[in-house]
Image (cartoon, rainbow, N blue to C red; front, side, top):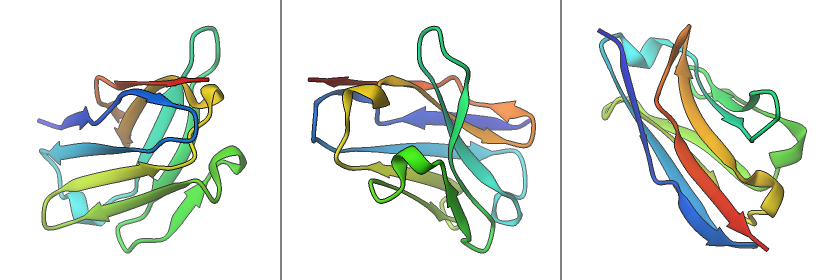
Length: 111
């Protein structure tokens, strides 16, 4: 069955960096679009970044130039490198494939 397991969240000061990882299993990972989403308390879940199987990427405007999505198809893992973090980036970050979701990892950015 499909499994998506996120890791790498935590508490960081404004301006700091974190790298999230999502280990995937149960499907042909290298063929599919993978994405990171986030949900802050009281807000809608939003797409943060996505990457196709061949490496084409897309980002929400608010993270362009600060976040980088990448993937290692040999390891069935997708990453989200987050730099210059801001308090408004605080949210639960979730990895997604098709209609499947991981459990999420909390990112908290203090001012």
